[in-house]
Image (cartoon, rainbow, N blue to C red):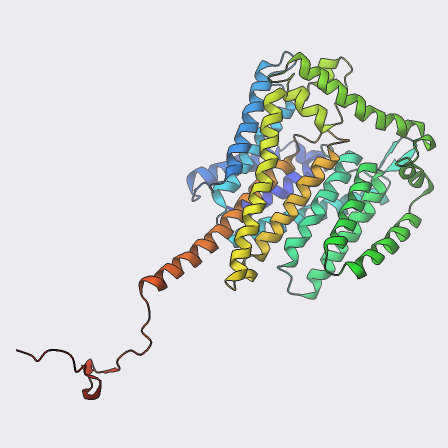
Length: 436
């Protein structure tokens, strides 16, 4: 099952059926998912990995279902946002019931990074060949597909995926592994530059500098980051420089200033939608219909209240809380393993959870300027972290089991030597009563 799941991950991320139209007519993504579900139902060993985040995921799915059912602007059969999220939920169930071993989890995370690297590389190649979008006076890189190719969304995805190099470092054994890591970082930085996404540019800087500051090598890394920032700035075109300057001086480009004001406008309109339907909102991706403007909210904190109402706020908050509670549990279990001398065995799971918490934090930051509440990252990362928590818990339970066995069968310091099952004369206890 793990290889079927990783194959679907590549189809979902790279989306070749949107690049080459002849593949689209074959419905490859849908057919592959149907095949995986049939294999899961018939031959796969299934056992749900228990974790508190399961409850959060299904509660959020319930809030989306209620919002869609009660919406006057859409229904379950026409809502693209709802249907896509239900597809993500199917993937979540497949992963949570099929992946059991830590080795399989390592394959899953490695495949995620490699698939996204291929997607970035293909998109960058197409940009060099002349495929881009010209928005707000700037030539901007887009994804090679048509579903998730928006410059802002693509840029955010690249920043969000960067922390997942951290757990992969645990698996590196050969030089070319490090060459891949450096290539991935450089390609990500260059692609983020070319998207012209100001939020992604800020997110990249926040991620790199925060990573340098918390590192034990901060005295070396921070100056390197400053020098790297200067070099990257010099490699930008004049149009991109002007766009990024609008982060601190909005008067440089009026259209960029209007874009920033649109985010704030989307937030307030989302609150107005919440007032219209305070319990379950106006429905997923129905912000534009409810306001009459035809635009999405472009703000997570206007999207969730307006489209899913109070139920959406509560369930989304609970989902985010579960990410941090899981990470706290993973840190506690890792510290226990380290005290027992098995810290190395839990390092991958710890770093994976750290990467996920970083990615979730970035999603929340990007939510200030993007409607990312229904992105697949939330549910994929929930599955990854729940599996990491389960793997660490099993390691801790195994140590507890061994300790209990040692306590139940204590070893004698000076056992009596036995030869051929006979007690030697000098070792025969003298205080035993005579036979007969």
